[in-house]
Image 1: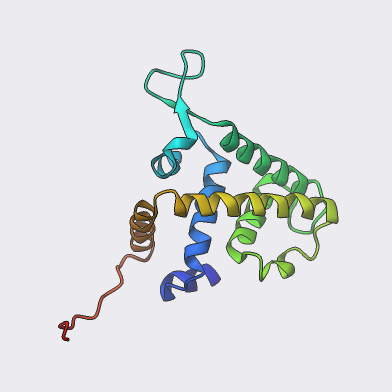
Image 2: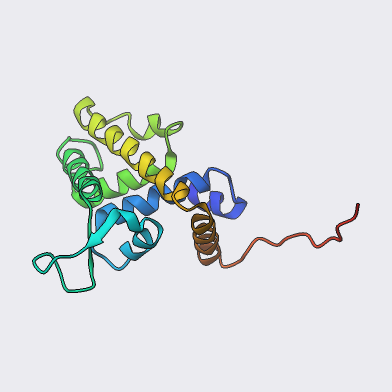
Length: 170
């Protein structure tokens, strides 16, 4: 419900949540078709594949993007094994991390109250890592990011923000 409200109200927090969730989904499956979105926004983070790493014309992740995917895997494993009520599988760990990414830093205390310190440290390290990727996603080419976020909001809500039509007068 909180995410839905962010979209409906075009809450400023939404524009912090969007890049975090994009990077989280990317890290969950960096070789999926969804990865093309990150590739188009951060092309410098991919390198041409070699004959041993993929078909001609394809690209591979650089070391930092690979590290993000590995970090997510560690966090999901830590959560799934931490004995947290309702977080017992990688799937429920994924939902926990997604919720944590949406909540951001200010409201995360409630979501993390049952998480043992060792697992919490892994989660918080991942969230800091996601936040830095989120900033890079937004700042590498701000015009592209603005267009991308506008399209995403439009696709998810099914409408674009209406602008007041008024004549400009001096």
